[in-house]
Length: 299
Image (tube, rainbow, N blue to C red; front, side, top):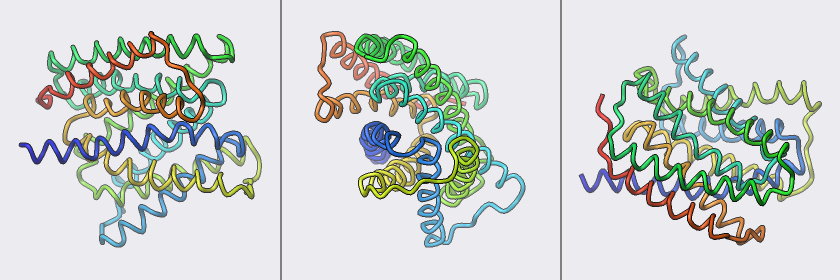
């Protein structure tokens, strides 16, 4: 039991730390290249890396209609809609606020997990969710007050982030289905990322025009970090954890992510912590500990 807990905690921590750093990088990228093209570059590289890894492991790539359909649906929901909305949201509101709102992912994850996968939510999980969401709400209020863009820009950014949340939640729940378990994860993710990148590129060509290739090494270093660490590595670890502990509890990685993102913002963007923000961060941490102490939901 202790080994299993460690096997979950370590990848959970790695994913949280990586995704906590990606918000700053995304914010930097959209200032150089249209968001749709940045998403396409990211998942083309991530999909290629995952494909090479799958070949090295001699994994079987999905080739039947069900497998290809699953990979395509995952690609569109997770690697097209989700990230298209996220990158668009960061053009309207601060990266820290996007990260905070995205922590709401645990709500649709829990509800869809109950409806689609028949996962029962324990009382401890519900209590932890309530406490954590209270903390997230305080962080949202603090970020909204400090946002210099004004209420309209904040509203647009929040709505776009909610769109990303719903798309990501559909992809997360799909990972808990029997169809997902039928196919090797690395090979399936490779196809999904490449499919998502292809749709992203089509949308980018239509909306933003031909692909730009900036000379900035910093931009391409950001693409590499987001693709290899923030996508190929993080999603491989996250989906494995999700299949073990369920969709609701796995979403708590997204509850800690905004706290890390705001800490990085303190170091690199001069973010100043108020009493409201500190209270929100503390409540988020307490809720996380309570929720993760719950047993895995029964089916």
